[in-house]
Image 1 (cartoon, rainbow, N blue to C red):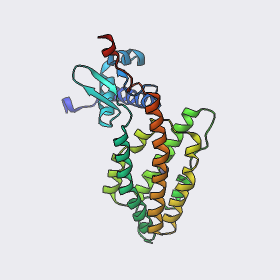
Image 2 (image 1 turned 30 degrees about the horizontal axis):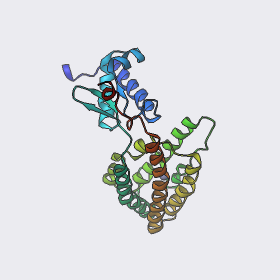
Image 3 (image 1 turned 45 degrees about the vertical axis):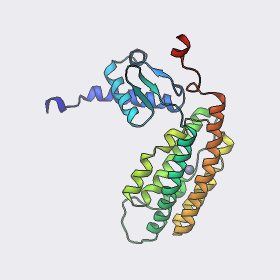
Image 4 (image 1 turned 90 degrees about the horizontal axis):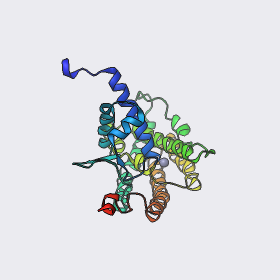
Length: 245
Ligand SMILES: [Zn+2]
């Protein structure tokens, strides 16, 4: 064991730091392009630098922070236009297929897939109403949307497909640009159409409903990303180091 042993206490601190930092990044409390000081974060959270470093290493793997030699960590900028379009092209290749597969699986009676009833998809299709706190509501919406898409992927019963969809981390990136509450109200109806087709064992209809949802979702998010770019995110502004030169 020796060096391989994980100290439970340190691990807990690293987990807490990770959760806290991730939450601040996806809520844009830590803005895209912001420089992260390990020392500053450690002082702010009143913990040592080691768990902060571990948390940042995990966030780097998820693509939420970037590390550059000599300059340290920064919050990853929002997706660029081409990255945004690629993300949806990939989702459009994989997620309609997952919906179609899920509908096929729903028709296989007596097959124990260990996931419970396909009817749960109907409940997961619902999105929470927007409350008074827009930021919290938006986070709850993103989480509900992510749960639904992850469930459809799981019900495809293709671990490879489900993993590929999960690896895109689509929601993590999309959530970081502000989307209007009105625009996300349409999501629930679209999700319900996907769930209904899967439960009714209609693979073609499920595939089509998922494609329609993603195409509409792309239009809604594209507007949000264009607005963020036009407003000049911190990442788009001149770098402070440059100005000081
Ligand atoms: Zn969705």
